[in-house]
Length: 285
Length: 297
Image (cartoon, rainbow over all chains, first blue to last red; front, side):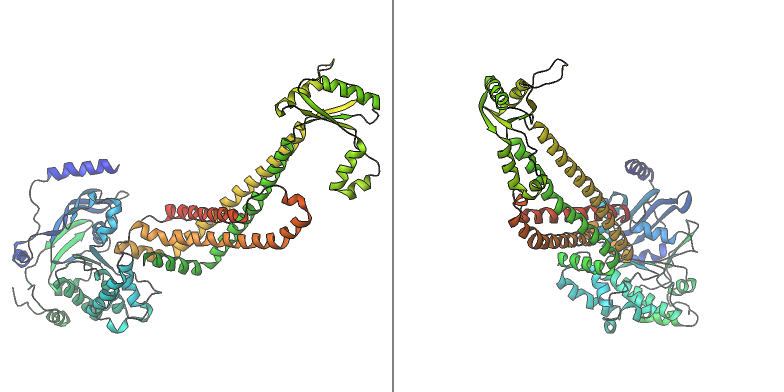
C-alpha cells in the first residue's frame, strides 16, 4: 500500500516539469537576503478524508525567513495543511517538502527527529496543567533528550524572550490566556526550530492580547525562523501586511505575497501599527 | 537522567491511577501466590511418584487364608522364574508393624490386621521387573492374567501404584496449570487496563511528547515501567506472604512432620527469582498489549 502510493507520487514528480512559482515578484527582493531556499514546498498536494476533500491540488512554497498567513473559514483546510506539515497526516496525493526533506520519504522512526525541527503552537495551548511554566517548557527539552545543563541554559532564555520571566513557577491555570499562549510558543521555540507553525494562535484571545502574540511571533520571525500562521482573524491579517495564502474548500484561492511591507520593521513599530485604530497607509508602497 | 525521568513519570502515573493499579497489584499478587504454592506442591507430588517408581520389586500378596505349605510352594515357584535374585517373606504381623510406624492412631483404630502375608521379589536387574511380573501372572483359561498359585491374591510390581500416583500428580499439575494460566491471563488484562487508563489520563502528555518530537520508545517507556512496577509490586507482596507462611507455618511443621520435608522442592531463593521474573513478564505483556492497541505513535 505504502509502496504503491510512493511509486505513484514518484511518477507524478517526474510529470511536473515547470518550476513552481506561486509568489508574486514583489517579495522576491525582500527574501533575497535569506537565499532562495524553500522551507515549505507543496506540490499538487491533495488530502481526502474518507471521500471528503480536505485539500485539493495545493501547490505553494514558502521561503526561509518568511512570515506567512494561512487564512480561510473553518473547514477550508488550514489545519490539514498544518497537520500534513508535521507528518501527522499523510497526503493522499502530491509531494510535500519541508527544509528539503520529502516528507513521504521520512521513515516512521525518523518522524520524531523531523518534528524537532518544527515548532507547533495551537489555539488550545496544549499545556500540561499540573506542571509549572518552567516545567512545561523544560518538558519539551527533556523528552527530546536534552541534558540537564542544556535545560538550565535554554529554558530561562526562552522564557525571557517570551516575557514570562516572572511567571516561572506558576501553573498554567494561574495564567491569562495570552500568557498561556506565550508558554506554548516558548515550548515550541525552545529548540530554535527553523520553522514555526501556529494553528489559530489567537483564536481564544482578545484583540489586544492577540497583538502581543503576533508581535512575539514576529520577533521570532526576525531571528530567521520561518513562521506560518493559520488564522481566521481577517483584521489582524490585514493589519500585519504579510504574505497571505487563502484556502477555500481545500483549494488555494489566493496567494498574496503583498510586497507592501518592510521586512526590517521593528517589533515595536509592528505593534504600534497593529494597535492603531485603522491601519495607516504603509510607508513603503 | 532518562531512566530517572521514566521512573518519576511511572511512579507519578501509578499514584494517580491508584484504584486500577491496586486491582492489578491484587491480581498479580494472587497469581504469584498461586505459582508460589503450586510449584513446590507439583514438585513434591512428582518426587513422591519418583520414589515409588524407584522401588523396583514385585510384591506377591497372599490370600488371608494361605497356609505355611502354600507359602513354601509359592516360594519355590517364584525362585524358578528367571532373573529372580531374592525372595523376602514379609509376614502380616511385620507388615502391620511397619505401617503402624507411619500412622499408629489409624492402625490402632482398625483393631485386626488387614494386611496379607507378602513375598517381596527382588529382580537381578530392575529391567526384569515386568518379565517377572508376567511370569507370575500367566494367562488363565479365560485369557485374562491369573496367578501362579491359588493361594496368591494379587501380584503387583508397583506399576499400578505408580500409575495411581502419577494420575494424582497429573491432576495436581493440570489444575495448577489451568488456574495459573487463567490467573496470568487475568493479570495481563488487568495490567493492560491499568495502562490503558493511564494512557487516557496522560493523553495530553503523550500528545505534547509527539508534537515536540519525542521518540516512540521515549513515549512508551514510562508506561511499560508503570506496568512493570505494578507487576513487581504484586510479586513482592506475594513473596512476602509466602516467606511469612514458610517461616511461621511450614518450617515448624516440617520439623515435626517429616513427610513434607522429604521430597526435594525448589529453594526459596529460586522461587523468588521465578516469581519476580513471572511478575515482570506478565506486566510487560499487559503494558505492551495496551500500548499496541491504544498508543499509535
